[in-house]
Image (spheres, rainbow, N blue to C red):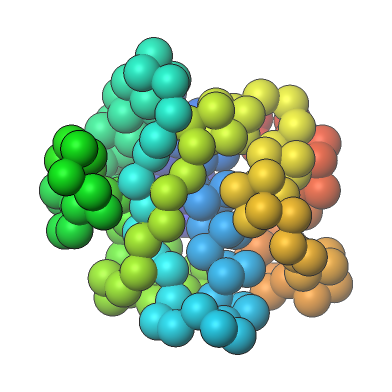
Length: 162
């Protein structure tokens, strides 16, 4: 219900919904195949070209204001030259929907260009890129609530979310 409400509430509601579906699917797939990855990944930082990072940051911050995402400063810097950046998580209300933990655990880095591609007409390709081409759950293996958006996840993009 919250997912559908975001579409009408936010200025960029459709883009936010697509972003939520994509990030949620990535975390769902990572949680589904935990082999060698414990604890599960539940947050992310955005990296890439400055303009892309800023554009995605604006969209994510709009998502924060509409309770789609949570944000806080990244907890650990990986090098001395790295600047402090924001760490994003899906709002805990989406945890059950995507069958992921609501707790803050590990983070991953997502390329801003991949998140921009999610907003385009081939979201499945962008999701595969974020997952580094790991195999994804087949449509009949998806939980019922995610199967509702199978057109979005299978590459059509426009039919699943408009």
